[in-house]
Structure formats: C-alpha cells, structure tokens
Image (cartoon, rainbow, N blue to C red; front, side, top):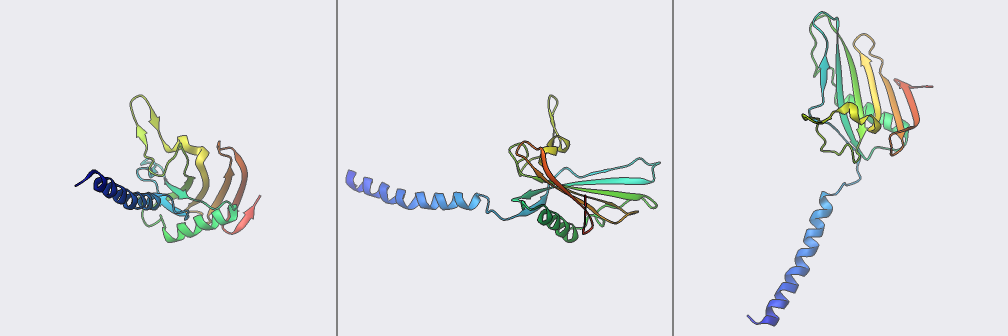
Length: 172
C-alpha cells in the first residue's frame, strides 16, 4: 500500500468515525425530558419500639423540573399516585406512619448519580443538599390529607418563591 493510499484510507475512516462518535455522545446527553427517580440508598424508616408512630422519608431526583410551581406540584402529585409508598412500607400493628417525600433538582453538588457517603473524614448525606430541595409531600395514616410544597430557588439555593397546597387548595 502506498503512502497516498494510506492517507486516503485514514481520511475515509476519520470521516466515517467522527460523525458516529458524535452521534453516540449526543445520545448520552440529557434529552430534556422531565424524569423522576428515587435516589438509591436514601430511604429512611425510623421509630422507637415503644412509640406509637413510624416516620418514613423517601428522596427523589427530578431531571428537568418544570419552572411553574403549580406544574411542579402536579408532577409530584401524579408521581405519588403512580408510585404509592404506603404499600411499600409496612408498620407494626397499631402504629401510625408519617410519610415525607422529598424531591430534588440536579446540580453540581447533587448529580443524578449521587450516593450518600459515610467516609471517615467526610460525610455527604441528603440533609446536606437542602439547597436543591424543590418539592415536598407530607401526610400520615392519621391525616391522609396531603400537603405539597413547591419551591423556586436561586442557583445558590435561596428560596425565591414558595407555594403550599393542601390537596388541591393553595394555602398562603
């Protein structure tokens, strides 16, 4: 094979491979769709044996959340109906369960693949990421009426606007 043929072959391979690589990279990027998933290894269920209640906390990530706070509340409400937590969490007979579902936005500090870290010199837990908390739902077996909170936050995590709902009623 001559040097000219080798250069031509390298050029053809380069022209064909570069677009394929770029297409592959583009498919791995965020599609822009809103998606919710539970953050693994963050569920908390606690209560003492002699107490009459159990507290359940579940944490979720919302990719590309809606900016409108009413739409955010509706998205969280729909997700809760499609993924009920009451059936997942059993409690000892006679105990009241208190449920808290927390929804976070993706950020540099809380990427989509984040996991808690209980290292010796440093820790990274969900409670360290309140700046990225954008919605919450609270209710119990005793009071099944759900309370929703939706937050618009600055990039630094300061609350710009908050909306609170009891079921479908806006409460100020």
